[in-house]
Length: 337
Image 1 (cartoon, rainbow, N blue to C red):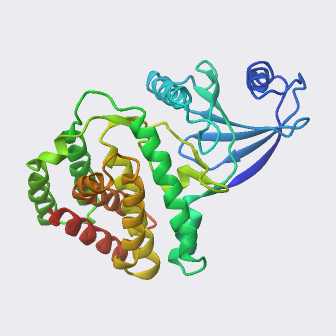
Image 2 (image 1 turned 120 degrees about the vertical axis):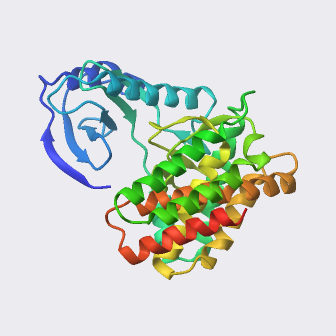
């Protein structure tokens, strides 16, 4: 993620009072000094890093409202959604070692629809995925990361199980939306869209897609949103799309990202299979019957892999040839049912 130094935070800025009066005490910093350095970070929203000059502690400020304008009702809803998701993660014990989700330290709906978050250090999953798929890092590095991530996701999912069954129709609608978007941008033909619709109907009639109970999902399980240091420690960030749904939504997203990286850098789906299999097997070990859990997850994962590949295919940086590979691989994943 890019990091651009913007200068010192003005003492007149309302953010300064929030950081000094609300955030620093929650970090155990006994200081009323209002001196902060400000950095702009990359991200889907206006994201800034505030470095307290006296203590060195760093804080992330995420603004859901548009710059210079009152935040919309929609922006405020999104802000509180992430704030409550992070609070939920703290309440179920995802703090410390080995599972740690960045804490929400303060909310400021009247100041840009902002939330202020604990800063986490670590190397993203994307670093290991890129390094191994490019042949620049040894395979065991990625295996270790995937073992830790499987443990993190299984813990988060299993601690938030509720009685309601999954609503697979939501996932079906999302895949269809992705296919329609690709058609509208002339990346795929009407015939390909109809093929996806036909294959999706087969998944809709597949009973296991409807039988699991809902769990709390990360909702945007991409390689950039999981951080790693030593051992099994995993840090989770960016929970703004967190919601209840099918655990395979998160698990399949990771599997699809693994496949994408090896396709992109090695031109090979098969090169990704040992890592995907390892990840799913490690996830399944956190259930009473590991083999049965593995079997059920493997039956359902291809649908979410297809969704992930179509999601990636939307990106403008994707070349036309590689977009074709992604679409064909998504089709093949759906056809595996």
